[in-house]
Amino acid sequence: MSIIGATTGELLSRLERGELTSVELTTAYLDRINQVDGKVAAFITVNGEKALRQAADVDRRRQAKQPLGLLAGVPVAIKDVLCTKGLKTTCASTMLANFIPPYDAHVITQLRNADAILIGKTNMDEFAMGSTTETSAFQITRNPWDLDRTPGGSSGGSAAAVAAGMSPLALGTDTGGSIRQPAGFCSVVGMKPTYGRVSRFGMVAYGSSLDQIGPFANDVNGAALLAQVISGHDGRDSTSVNAPVPAYSQTVNQPLAGLRVGIAKEHFVEGLNPEVEQTLRTALHVYKSLGAEIKEVSLPHTSYGVAVYYLIAPSEASSNLARYDGVHYGHRATQFSNMIDMYATSRGEGFGSEVKRRIMLGTYALSAGYYDAYYLKALKVRRLIRQDYDKAFEQIDVLASPASPNPPSKVGEYSANPLAMYLEDIYTIGANLAGLPGISVPAGFTEAGLPVGIQLLAAPFEEEKLLRAARMYELATKWQGQRATL
Amino acid sequence: MAETLDIEKVRKVAVLARLKLSDAEIGDYATKLGNILKYVDTLNEVDTEGVVPMVHAVELSNVFRADEVQPSLPRAAALQNAPKTDGTFFLVPQILEDK
Image 1 (cartoon, rainbow over the protein chains, first blue to last red):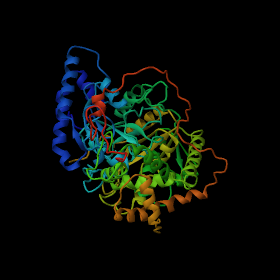
Image 2 (cartoon, each protein chain N blue to C red):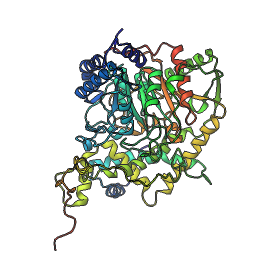
Image 3 (cartoon, rainbow over the protein chains, first blue to last red):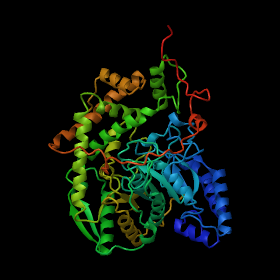
Image 4 (spheres, each protein chain N blue to C red):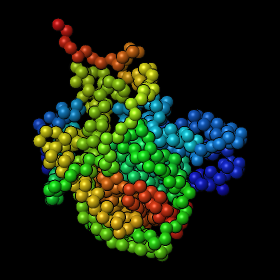
């Protein structure tokens, strides 16, 4: 059986049985990166030497029968927005092109404790702002299923790395859909946990009230295991919730009896691609055949989600990104007239156009005379959106929708029209505004062979239910085994 | 339809945001931000009378922790990414004018 394309569970049991060493496994993935990443450009940094040293250490400890962590010897690719001690973390920005963090993000500590192998840092939209991975200052990542198309974003490098078999697992971050949308576009599993489930310590902040770190995997079980490893309380993130972490990987294979799957009538609107809609309807039939009940619910404020998000996220970003001033770290201009000019010139040079656009938008929305009309108004509608979901989840267990209204875009398609790109976030944004967990699962392909994902959302802290519902669907369909050929 | 934001307003916001922008960028943002702001105006359709603003998804308040001394970054690590340092401090351009 091949290593590339195997599921995390398969790899772990082969390692445990001694059929495979972590060094062999890690070497196979590094070779794969060498072979195909020239076409895909998913990685900004490949951590080859250190990864092999880590793998050799795990092998030695396994040989000595020492206790090992849950992901012992298995590679994980890391979105380049998560701080890795001693390993360059760029956020795909000129601003941080040479930034070497002096500490690990909490999730990286968790991965190290689980004996996972950090195989490399993946490309993304600059500072996670974008839906295509095209705003990276360094490279454009290509969709492994169609190299003329984007992998989605902003965690496009992580999604493409898993889809192209360059890593069985990856971490991404999701502020408005940045895990779930690229997962759908690349036919892999991607989950955004409940806000507060995973510590954001050491994650470079974009929209702090929306950001959450989550797993990518080539099957639901892999996502369950990685979610279990990274979840849990951390005092260094004051929004991290102190609640026990269920053993998701232990329960994920148990089907749910009497499952109530909701669909929102507001999701079937103009702009939804007919092939994507058909894919969702087919998925609902699968759930029905598994004994689930399909229920229509209403989310009356759905159409305002994008507007609310594109006020709140840039407002938070304009504040978060104020720290890049060329003083403590990051790019400093060489030509400037005084201190203030040094800030402005360094920032003007260091940030790309989408980042500057969002800082400008956020600064405008927070400025005197506009704060009430824009930012405060958005926060009020945000509560109404959350109340819609609360009401819906009184009647249903999970809410099914497309992950995105259209299949992956062509490279360059949105460059002249950012608003058109923003509108594509309609199905994913609600979960961030309301803080809900969500998962995107492969659900088939368009006639042109482009991946389509379905998204499931659940009430806060119902990850276990979400993963079990997703696994039921995965086992009943043939999409999990499909791999992009490169 | 393209709704253009006033160029002077864009310049003012750029000063607030500490962003040095080219004239081309200012012009581009005037159009694109104008379009986005026109779109977000749809929120005015929503009646939010009496609705409490939702700042966070998990509405925790007053998260306290024990006031204990924890190890902090060693100086060398804190300075390792500094654009300019003398090994003890971060160095910045002179702020006060010479007399």
